[in-house]
Amino acid sequence: MHDIRIWNGLAAFGNRLLDLLFPPVCLHCQQPLHQSAPLKLCPLCEDSIPRLPNHFTREHILNRLENCALEALWIPFGFNPVMRKLIHSVKYDHRPRLGAQIGEWVARQLVVNDAIHIPEPALLVAVPLHSVRVKERGYNQSECIARGISRILQLPWRSDLLKRIRYTRSQTRLNRSQRRQNVANAFTLSSPDLNAFRSVVLVDDLVTTGATMNECARTLKQAGVQHILGMAVATPVNLGDEALEV
Image 1 (cartoon, one colour):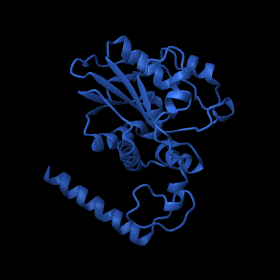
Image 2 (cartoon, helix red, strand yellow):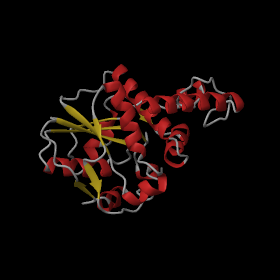
Image 3 (tube, helix red, strand yellow):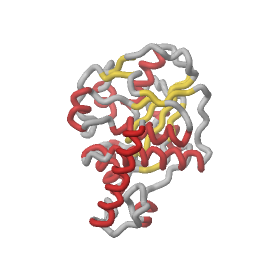
Image 4 (cartoon, helix red, strand yellow):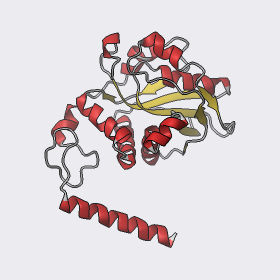
């Protein structure tokens, strides 16, 4: 434990030194940042991200899902070029710490909006990646986000409950029907230890049609989970087929 504290202290000192030598800039517009900006966005870029009303996901995602297994879905932000840069930085630039900070940001926004009601005891579960993609990236970005949400909502999270058993093609250029077919039977319950929880909250970075998260929810529902809820960072504001290439 003592060695861990020393290592964490050295890492924190190293980060401060890097900020002094290479002052941080906004991920999107590259303007200089105040050193305490956790999301690496300037105020103008952060403010440009759309804030969604609480009813948005019900009207535009859940109501359009066939055999919806999700009781609720909470997404506070719309997807725009700034949000794209933020999420891509976590996924492809090896920034797991930024992912956790995004999770904290999401949870705070939902609490401020009085958007969430989670029957407890509850468990946060990240939507899993296939092992091949985890090896490529070094981590699952949704687990990082779930870790940040956990800190704010004071809920436990687990990464070993669901497993993606089938390597699926990217959903990016698929239409709504193709997305649903692409993830069908792609997940399994890797740990049956659910008796202690009334609710499972699935966590992902981006939800478009909801097909992936709903397939995870279907797997949990078959295992007898009472309440299956969803939480994500962002979704496209226009959910027509023209908005699916994100």
